Amino acid sequence: MTLYLLVKYLHVLGAIVILGTGTGIAFFMLMAHRTNDAEFIARTASVVVLADAIFTLSAVILQPVTGGMLMMLSATPITERWLLASLGLYVLAGLFWVPVIFMQIEMRDLARKAAERRSALPERYFVLYRRWFAFGFPGFGATMLILWLMIAKPF
Image (cartoon, rainbow, N blue to C red):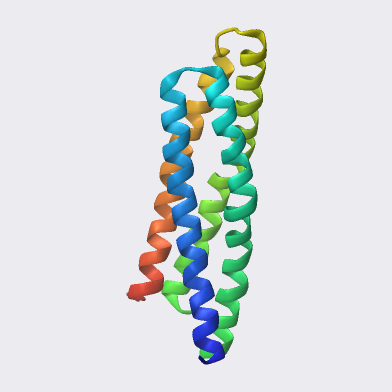
């Protein structure tokens, strides 16, 4: 295996981890939210926060490193339009993903407190959930577009 193929493999693997973890997190948070059970939401959100810290963060760090290495190894100039579009979308995805991390942490903490008190989830939790849900569309959509740009290199 050449160095280029190894780096490309790691780059594609990073994209898979980002998309897979993002999809899984969204699914499990949505399913937990639908129960309206503060204890279950707290446990699920705890795992989600941990998964984001371990898997998503690692892949998010890996992507620009492997992408930069691929550019160097293939002599691809940064002025390629598909690459510039991908980098812009990566920043856009990050602008939506970073706040989501803090929303998940706060939703977890609010659910924990409600579970400890055996009370209903506070309104703040629902505000955060709606915002978290809305942020997922542009963040995930940008990531899907990046994947398409990486494969198709349309311009």
